[in-house]
Length: 597
Image 1: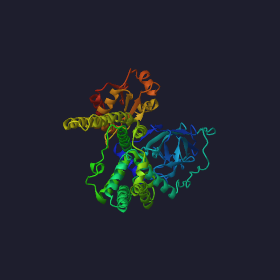
Image 2: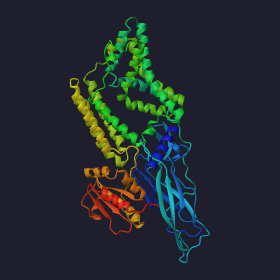
Image 3: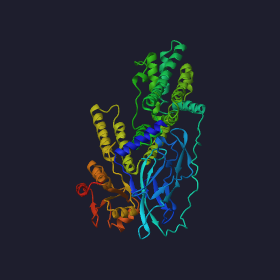
Image 4: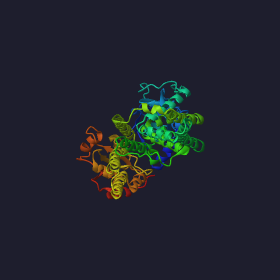
């Protein structure tokens, strides 16, 4: 779990550096969780006992970690209640619901989580020595800090979710005979200690061996396999014994590749206290983006848009790769050539292996290599078996193309796991990247003049780089902490005299995308919004049924997007900014605001 802890702690640092601040409202709503609070009684008497009910509603496939013992980095769900102005309210320990068991695929372990809809009860009492004014009623503000990483099978969101705020009324005549809900008398069991191993060690090692065997049937390797084996046999015609030794040298090259993976895992675990945890990496949006784009490129390879050439030292019989050193090198190359097609298999097995103790992880990784070497060892010791291998043909090409569509499907799945503000840009760039890869490999051939080939490929790279700068978020740069549109939140924030910026946009609006890049991605605008304490709201009008779409017409009387509505303290009417060239006016208004406390 050390790797997972480091990854989630890294997420915390990244979001802190990017200026993501917790919100303080009567409800919290993000793209994965909605949190609200309800009081058990409308008013509480002096010395009386009551409770708050905190309602959580998570999107499908998302969860909170329930137990501090099993949560990576200690990022389990925590509630931290506090009275804002005095010590009138005395809180008891929160009462959590029954946790559920969740299989974390990155570690192969079951963890305790909360998912779907659930309620956490927060009992409290009013101090007996509270003095009320002549009216017999008083109101005190309570804030409940919510912390805990919201995670899916692919990524996690920052643990600092926000702060709920509610007002508790204390009254002499408080009617407490009709509570709105019942609080459990005892805390519900958390299910601690129920996690169990999913796989036995021997079963996992057998799976690793079978995965290694499976690498040999990948279409990336199959056409090269007979060439490599025949090359070894040609060099060992003198005797069968030498043929076997050459085959073993070739197998050693394969094992060397997997030894490099195991070595990287050892170095990271010993010197950095972590492992190559693919599951944790997939919780990082930047890593998810890179992997999805890599899958798009690999899909283009499967479609034959470009090819990976085999070095002439292997394809020909008279190259420099002779002898035992050459056989080891060819084995290493064969293992590398297997990775484009076997990427998913390799990652799945490594994900399990790298979550185990160091010795077992190393053995498991090497067992994958042993599984891959077995067919080569058999073929070099019994060359007649080569005649029984299926011949390359049309079936192999169709198989490769089918895998290409599978890779594209996985890429789209990864992109949908990105934060909502990044998905559309990533999808557009994936199309552009596919086009650039097609230019690189499809617009040139072996007979294309060198100058023309150089020009075409330079243009392809420039298009890819320029599009990436335009469509993808800047790595490590600050971003605006956008909140989803909520009419109630807007009204409450206006009442609190806090500035609000509402960007009305739509996914199909190209001008909206341009505003995102030319205005809201600019460092000075982001710093002004953060420094002035402006509540930034993104109002998505992509669908006609969205609340933002309805309010755009009925409340703001605006015909279309993009439009930015800016509520400024002390002004009865909001500022309206239309079109693309709004950066200058927006900065002018923001600069006139006082710095936040």
